[in-house]
Image 1 (cartoon, one colour):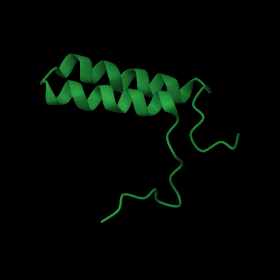
Image 2 (cartoon, one colour):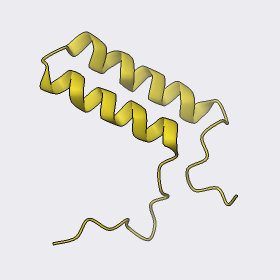
Image 3 (cartoon, one colour):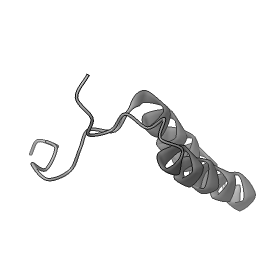
Length: 57
């Protein structure tokens, strides 16, 4: 079974990937505060206009 991107979902940019990984690690370590911080930072990043996900280079 392969994990391919859905056609209607843009590929995440590097900061998005790093924040998603940091959130997953925090959840695995039961560090709920850090996981929440990662979600907040992800939302801010996406709303800032710096997020390159789905934009052509």
